[in-house]
Every structure is written in structure tokens, then in C-alpha cells.
Image (cartoon, rainbow, N blue to C red):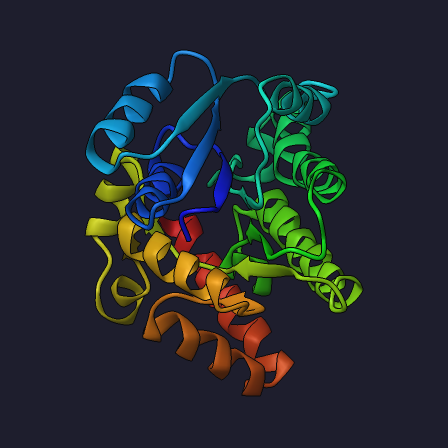
Amino acid sequence: MKNLTALITGASEGLGKSFAIECAQLGFNLVLVSLPETGLEFLANYLRRNFGVQVFCMETDLTRNNSDVEIFKLLETNKLRVNVLINNAGIGNWSWFEEKDPDFYRAQIELNVTNTVLLTRSFLSHIDKSEPSYILNVGSLGGHFVVPKKQVYGATKSFIGYFTRCLQLELKSTNVRVSLLSPGGINTKSELLVMNKNLKGFAKATILEADFVAKVAIQGMMKGKKEIIPGFANRLLLTVDKVIPSFWKEILMRRNLKTILSV
């Protein structure tokens, strides 16, 4: 694995940071991409010092036009070749549709959808498809369900799922392995920790730590798994959803909606 170099977006915090640490532990060299002034170089120094890997940092706003082209031009300028792409960067939310302004949704779609598509396109032009290469697209378990207050976010993750499954078919005859990560809730930020702490029972069992999700995801990616769903409770939830009749799902969702409205 020491000959692998991974490009990870949204690498400075949360799941992206956990991906960077997990890959470094496995001996991957790294290209880390994140927004300016998010502590990326501090993380890079930690990884170099503790795991002896090469780390190259790029600070950029991925919602800007042509950011994908700029990233791969910079790789070429610095004579860097990557053979693992982890499309992790994304914007989430937990709000009623009309609570967010159009600029928020524009940025969310640009980052979650457009950036993932264009980075993947540039990556496929960058690699030799006859050699082992990997793409890991971060979707969400929410992309499988209708979830109030996650209407646009869930739609972007549904897109990522469809996009990834199509790529898996198109690239089947190559040495490029494409995986979809569909995690449930992850404790990545302080506000999520507070919110998830109040969960009980099965709902609490679906919430996982970022380090665990990253470890399972990278293992699954290296094995060429098509979809990676960390956690038994999350896998069970998806299995049960497939056998529940549609009208029961609608009833349950309406009840859930009433609960949200009463909070």
C-alpha cells in the first residue's frame, strides 16, 4: 500500500481528518484539500511526524468554478500522481427548506454534487486505468430515505449514490474500483455531539464515531466493495426499509414529522 497516494477533500476536520489519519497509518502518501485557515498544515505536520508519509496541502474553496482543474494542474506542476480519490467534502444542514437562502443551496449543490462529479472526471483523466486505482464517494444513509429538514442534502446524496453505481458499471473492465460510503449519523462536530447525546435506543445505535467510519470505509474501498454501510444498526435499518410497504413508510414519516414540529 505504500505506493498509493490519496487525494482527500474536506480533510482538515471531521470525517475527512479521520480519513487522512487512517490512510497515513496504512502508509498512503497524501494530498489534502480543504478551505484556507482550517488547520490543514498543522494536520499535515502531525501526519508527517507520526507516520513518515509525504503530505501535500492545497487550501482552496471547492465551490469555485474550475477548482477541480486547478487542483490537478497543481498536481502536475509538482509532479505528483494520485491513485486514490476520496470525495469527502460536503455541506449538510438540518433546517426547513425556506429557512436557508438560495445562496446556501447553491453552494451545497455545487460542493456536494458538481465538485464530486468534476473532480472524479479529472481524476479519471489523471490515472492509468490499467493500474490499481480507487474512488471513494461519500454518500449518506439519508440518501436512501426521505428525511424532513434534510431535503436538499438528502437529494445530493441520492445523486452521489446513482452517480457512483453508474461509474461502477462503466469502469468494470478497468482496474479502477469505485465505492460508495453510506454512513448514518457521525459525531463530527460539537453541535452534533450535543444533539446525538440525547438520542436513545436504536436511534442512538445508528450514530458512529468518525474514526470507526473511516477505518471501515478504507477497508471496504481496498476490497472493492460497491457500497459500504458502517455499523450493524445502519445495515439493519436499510434491510428493514426494503421490506416495509410504501404506505407504512408514509405513515411513519408523517408521525416523525409531527414529532419534529412539536419540538
